[in-house]
Image (cartoon, rainbow, N blue to C red; front, top):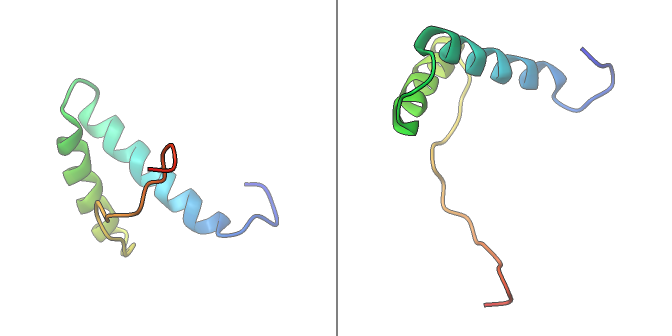
Length: 62
């Protein structure tokens, strides 16, 4: 891991969770299947998160 990056350990854990889900499930599922599995893996790793939060999108000043 590179030194001095903000939240380096957290980033490593998140990527590890995503890789574990992908290696377990493989490819070809709908996105929601991976979302559900990643939610379970985050809980198993005791990583707190919120899912699909709304946020403002600024596009073409509309």
